[in-house]
Length: 180
Image (cartoon, rainbow, N blue to C red; front, side, top):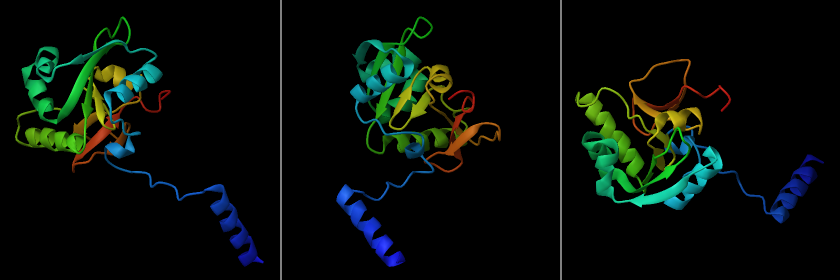
């Protein structure tokens, strides 16, 4: 009887078009959300999640230095495929949206970790990260959008953490559990 039930269930699944579930990532950028691969997807996500992303302006990569400063821009530029700005609210009138392509987000993490290990940087970036993108207004991203800070050598058992793509680093969101 069990064999008949199992055969029937398998046949029903086959007829209904069932497929094996995609494995869920438990670490890295893949574990913090759906990957966004175009700037249009990032903008749409911002509008859906933040409620607004007006006056979207595609920016030249060289203009990133004027937006976040030379030192921070130099850390991001090799890994950013494109970036834009938009207005989210009066509190966040100009937010930078950075898009990583391919393996660039992992490479960015490695570079930042290496700079911290070498003593060139003391802390993680103030940006908030999703899968394939970053938002310049870290507080907005973490507190209102459910994104994550990127941190290395970080220990705080009260903060939701997801292992990042590189050893000794995590995606951390101290706001998770507070309505997000």
